[in-house]
Image 1 (cartoon, chains in turn green, yellow):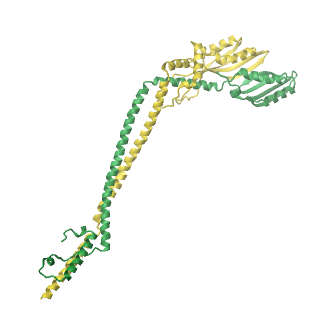
Image 2: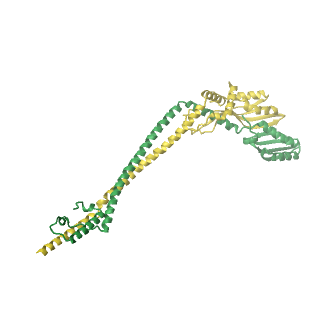
Image 3: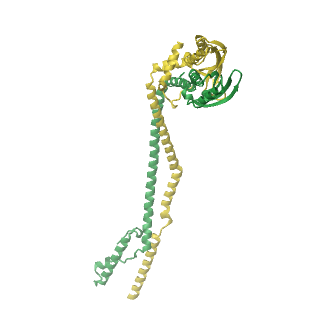
Length: 224
Length: 238
């Protein structure tokens, strides 16, 4: 009647078999002559119903088989994807490397422009370095002398300029008041950053003084 | 007799049913062989992942990173090419000559001092002291760092205050070379002013340096005003 192996049967088949069994039972109940062919076709059902545990087992097996197939497919897919990605990346890289090489070759032929430009730049930067420390001595001396003139008969006899317009002044005056006025004017001048009276002394000829200070450099810068 | 046959048939039937059920139960049982393939596949996948895929992905990512780097370099070279194309070859050569004139490869003490002494003479100043020597600015003797050289020396002149100030004023512009002045000192003695100063003239030794395509490139034309100063100073030397 049913020649497929029992393990390949579905649970529905089992129900179908049961149904057939019931039908066959009914057929047995119906009185029919023993020699009829219908009775000969009715076989004995040896296959019992699938228990619930058996149905679960069957499902598990199917799932595992599907899992294996999916795993294999994933493996193949991932392999193709990774290998493909690798190959494409390497092809792209090689193409770009070739492009870059061509660029380098092209630019190497005008390397004299680069070296020439760098040599000029080097000199420009040196010039700028020197220029940032340059100031106009004339402007500075004239400015200090103008403050001295406002203070009375101040005579500045010596100027010493250091880096960033630090300075030392020596001079003489008739009175101490003139020196103090000169000191005051220097202290309150916007172009004088700091001022210290180093020494002051009265002699027979007048008053000798010495100042040390710093001017605001940006106010006296000059171009070379 | 008939009953006995019936009984035998029934017993045989029950026996067969029991055999079929036990066979079925044994066949539907989950065996180790059923899960062997998935376990193997998963194991292979894990092994492949660890020993093949991860290194391959790492390699691919490294390749991608290199690709990005090359792209960046390409962009840099593209910009460099544009900048170089904007530099006129003839102008560059002329400007280079001017720049090398005012800050030469070597600077002779005589030629450096000549212009300053000449200026002092023009301003009616008398020479008190004049000397110069080579100096090295920046860099390090042991390391091959960038450095510049200079000729530096103390100078002293005397004359009236007006002439001294005029001399100081013209000092920078009179010399066709790029110079710097330091430690200016003025002192009055018997109505005559003496100026002492330290003057340095610069020169840049020849750099036999490989050009770097990927180095910072800024065209010198951005400092047009300085180039003009070089040009005007160079004209004095020609």
